[in-house]
Length: 85
Image (cartoon, rainbow, N blue to C red; front, side, top):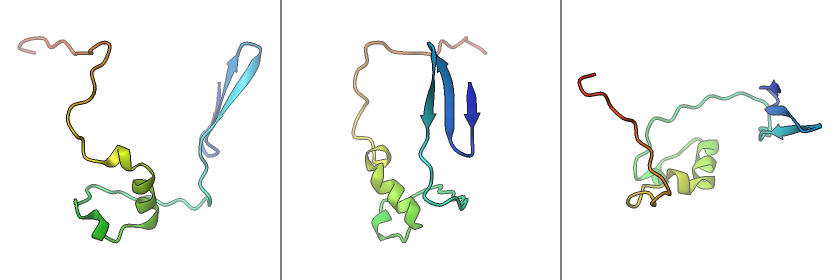
């Protein structure tokens, strides 16, 4: 397996060939770090850093408030706890 973190690709041997997985590259290579710890419910009225605003719009279903419990699954996972541990 080969990985190039800066160019965001991963090459994996598969059967008699190599599969290359390519991540999304930014439009420009300027590195910007943004930390967002909380957004109020009135985020429409906040002046957000444009890339953050675009991210929230693109993945609005991920960032929306949950509406009830998650759907039932074929199997449930649990972590057994040791009493007194």
